[in-house]
Structures are given as C-alpha cells and as structure tokens.
Image (tube, rainbow, N blue to C red; front, side, top):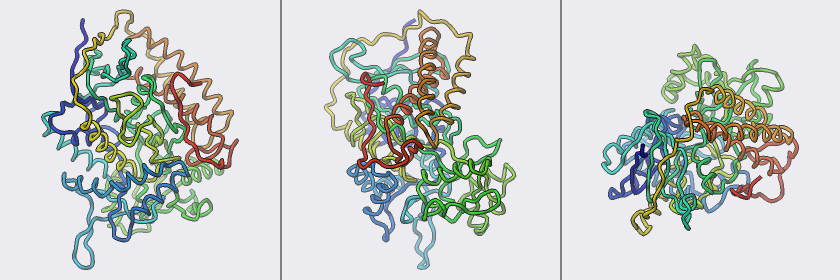
Length: 535
C-alpha cells in the first residue's frame, strides 16, 4: 500500500504559541500544514500562567529588561539576541491586543484604565502583562480562533512527527529539508508531508524528568529529529526546574505561578519559617535556579516532602481575582490558599537549550527552521528569566515568517521520496519494554541529572542511556512504531544530549550546578554539540 502524502509550502510541526504565530504571520498565499501531536488546545502554551515580559510602563526601560535578562542568564546570553527580543516586546503586545487578547487592566487614580503589570523573579520592574493566572490559555485560544479563519492553513490533529526528510538522506547532493514523515495516531499509518519549508515548533523536553510541570507532549521531538537530521544543538545542560509546582497526589503537573511570589507570597518551611533570605538577598524574587536549589537544599536537609508557599496574608478578594485558576484548583483538592499555605516542590519546567538557530530561526539545514522552546537562540543563557518564553515564541515566529517570505519562492524540487516501508516489521507483543524503559529513563534522569549533579551521577546516567538507546534502537527496527515508542526514542536522544552537555561543563553556572565544579570559569562559553562528531 502506498504512503498517503500531502504537499504544502510550509509544514509547521507543533501548534503552540510559536507555531500559531508563524502561521498567522505568513501571507495568505502560502499553503500551510500544521501538525499537532494531540488536539490543538493541548501544549505548554495553554499551561503558561504568568504572562509575557514586555517594556510597557513609563518607569521601565528596554535597557533594564535587557540587563535583567543578562543577569538571570549568568553570562551566557547573547547580547544581540536579548536586545533584539526585548526591543520587539511592545509590538508583540500590540499585535496580541489587536487580535483580541484580553489582558488584565486596572483603574488608575485619574480614572484611566491601564494594563495591570506584575513582577516575577529576576525582574527589577513590574513588566509582566497577563490575563489573570491563565495568560497562555488566553493567548492560545485567541490565536486558535484567528487560525480557524485562515483558509490557507490546514490543521492535522493527532499526528506525531517521525523524522525529517533531507536531500542527503535520499542520496541527493544537497542538504535541504524536504518534509517529514508523521504517524497518524487515529489510523496508526505513517503519512508523508512534503514542504518547501519545515518549521519545528515542538516545545521542550521536560518530560525526560520524572516530575515536570509540562504536559505529556513535551518529549523533545523536534530537538531529537533535528539532531538525527544533522543539526547542532546548544546548551542542553541548562534545564530549568520551576521552584513551585503543587505537591499533591491528585495534582498532576500543576504549576503554582511565580506571579504569586511577585505579589508577596512567601516560601516557608513546614513549621512556617521563611528561608529564602538565607540564600539570596532578593528572597522569593531571586531567579528560578537559585530558588529551586534553595528548596531542594531545605527538603534534603529536613527530609521533608515539600515546602510551602504562603499568600494567605493578602486580601481574599485580591487573591481570588488575580489567581482564580490556582485558587479554584487548590480548593478542589481541599486547600484554601486564602487561609492556608500551598505545598510545593520543584519540577522540570523549561529547556533553555535546543536546536541552534540564527536570529531568523534558521537552522544548519537549509529550509528548516526552529522556533520557541525547541530552539537555542542565545536569549536565555544559563537560566531563562520568567515570562521571556512566550515573548521568544512570538518574536522568533515573526522573524522566521518574514525570512521565509523573503526567500526566492521556487517550486518544490522534483525528488522522489520513498514510501514509508513497514514490510520488515511486525506488531509488538512486548509493549512492557517501552513502559519499563520509559519509567527507568525518567527516574534516573531525575536522580542523576537533576537540580544538583556530580560527575559520578552523570557517568552512571550516560551508561544507562547508551544501553537504553541500543535496546530501543533494536525495538524500533523490528516493530511497527507507536506514539509511545516515538516519544521514548526521542527522550533517550535528548537525555544523551543533556548528559553529554553536562559532562562537558566543568563549572557551576545558572541552572547547571555540580558539586565537583562549584565555581564559575572565568570565561562563559556555550556548549555546542555537533552530530557525526560526538561522543
């Protein structure tokens, strides 16, 4: 049976803020296919609570936002990229408002209504514009509504990308990306998507860890596919652990927004004692790496399962109006945050590294772009500052759309792309192998490659990933693919990249903290891994 195929001008793999922004920014004469692994309303964008960092207040400045980002990034941010991103922030917000995104407003003493801006860790000003504590859902649903009106955009829900297709893989002389194979999760058949341009907007890889704030789709698919296709990756050792995820047996991956700390919430020990001032003079508003390590230290010191975040000293109406989603979810679980502190633990939250790109989102492979959390632009350095992520998605999606539209619009090359071949594989009767390896990977990544690392732990993790890679490689060669197998294969690839990057960094900087090298090196350098010259 021949492989079902499609042809478009642009193939976008991923349907979050980055992917949707790019689709909307492309002119209507581009035929666009957008693949989403789940339904289009699932993904990290919809879980983003805090907001978008932007210079909107007369007392704030571009220079201040740049400086805060550079400080949080611990010397590894690329200054030109930070400057470019921050300078675009007002126009991004203006575009979102024009689309109808309903950000929170407040009435001033003179009767004027202005946007309510909150402050989060690492920021020296209130510059985070938000929609209560569900900013990502407000932005995502608004972008999705506008996409439905675009006749040139075709949405393919429940499609899992398998691998990219490049000229050199087909025996051609060039290296251009020609499209991708994708598994239709409804039919379990692999289909072919040809495109003149392919954009990876697949999000991060925090599902490689046992505890994460991310949805199940965050399995590093774009990073792994780009690596296999020949793209470099950068700074994969910098995995941000959000300090405050809800600790409750019935609460899966529920984030407690940093905005609570911006509005005065205090981190306290089980006996109610505040502790952040012992670790940083900024207290609860220190960057996330510092706060997460402080919590991890106190939990290990005391042998406790969690610490607590207390905002109950604030007015009840203030809490319920500013944090309605968090208030409602906690109340469902028997926690009234207007009366009691919230049990919290750190959890893997954001992948600061990714596929290396230029300022247009272009990768090492011609006609292949990466935007959003799957990319490494140099914006975040060794630690992402709060609420710069949604900003990055929209800034670089806009840049990539503009770059694509400036290219000579030549027709698709006439290259025969082979059908997906399943003639030599069978249905698996050993899916327990996948579930067992999946659980083992995420547990040892949490234990050995987590908030605090050592050489011995990293070497143990590397040995295990190499064994798992061999096992899953054999499994992939012999059995029909499933979404679970694809995700496990990608997560093992990402785990190897994280571990190898961490082993190469002989210092503690930002999110990478190792007991064997507790000090900073005098010169800050990115960790760049190159395929075919690796190990």
